[in-house]
Length: 237
Image (cartoon, rainbow, N blue to C red; front, side, top):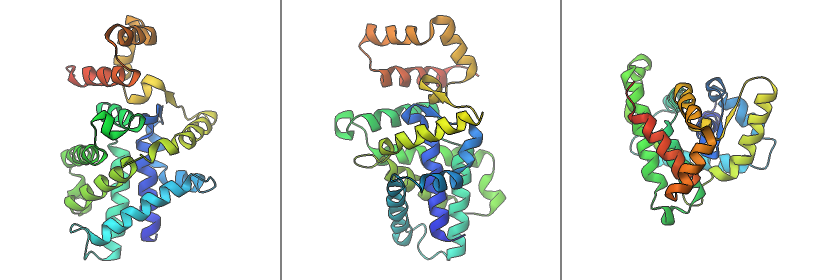
């Protein structure tokens, strides 16, 4: 595979892993379909947004201290493994809720930074991968993987975020997956809330309960979702 192809697959995987920020959750198995997703998207005008992120990420690799000087074969190997790690350890519910807020509100108004969030997402994915010795198994450099994850998510969330522009395509891809019986969750379930926790919410009144909670405390839909994600993350396992 060419380096461009590997980068395209990686960016496709990052987009798939970010789908819950657009209120679309793909089944875990679909997060591994990054190449198929990019091929599917190549028939649509929105592919230009993925290519723009690929080009920006490519420039980062040629100038970044972490990647400068690495042979192309080594770069391809690191990029390919980065795509696998994003599929294996996608952003958690709380970070997805922050991404959702960022893509719906101008960063300055929300007091959020795409780059700062991308750094936290990267650190979290690397931390979980380290716990499973992912780097030792594959003989790759942790700093290169962390750099690639950070810059890929950073470009996806930078400025006038690319992610919302890919929302309609993600929705169509999810619809096709559902039509093929692969299952897609929408709305609250898209933020990665566990089945057990979702059942607790249903028992309390489900979506109506959450809507009333937002109205009662003057919270937006995104703020309610962030609150729910935070509550679950603090619950004892």
